[in-house]
Amino acid sequence: MTILIAIDDTDTRESRGTGRFREFMRESRVDDLRVAGVDEVHTTGGETIRTGMVRLKKFPRPSLRAHRAILFVEEGDGYYHDVVMD
Image (cartoon, rainbow, N blue to C red; front, side, top):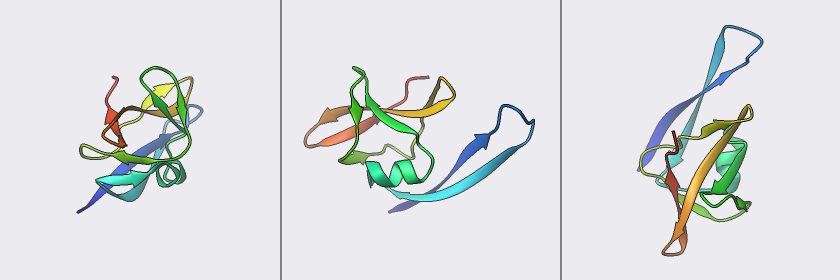
């Protein structure tokens, strides 16, 4: 199953945003998420994840931290699972 999402790429210096569309499968590689606009993937404990597979509930919902899109995950059954923090 493929899911189409929009990531709002709003520049804080301008009032207009440019939405970027990406397709994701329920299981996506960390590298693919980063290419699509997620700046970093972190565990809820603060560890930075650079490789691996992330199981998505629907689509990536990164949190904004210091002007960066951070996707939070928890590890379980050999995968990382996305967690919505805010």
